[in-house]
Amino acid sequence: DPCLNNWYGVTCVGGEVTRISLTGVAAASGVTGSVPDALGSLPSLLSIELGDTSTLAGTLPPSWSSLTALSYLSLSNNSLRGSLPDS
Image 1 (tube, helix red, strand yellow):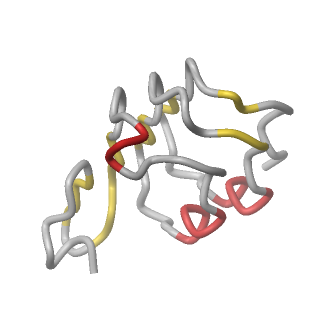
Image 2 (cartoon, helix red, strand yellow):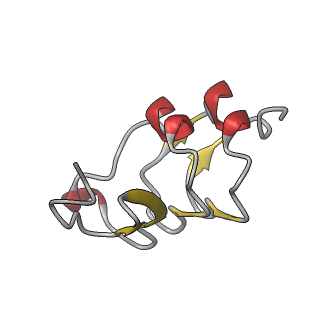
C-alpha cells in the first residue's frame, strides 16, 4: 500500500493516492517501460507527473479515461505516442 508505506513520489490524502510525481527520475531508479494500466483504478488521482524521464514508451492505457478527478498531467520528454483515451 503506497499510502501506508510512504512510497517515493506518491502523495496520499485520507488513504487515497492523489498525486504521483516522478518527474526527472532516471531509468536507473526503475522508471522504465510502458505507463501502467493500474493507474486508471485510482479514482482520487489529481496529478500525474512523469515528465522528463526519457524512459517511458508506448501508449496511454484506455483505463485512464476513468481518471475523472485528474487535473494535471505531465508526460513530456518520453517516447509515448498516440492520443489521450476518450473519457
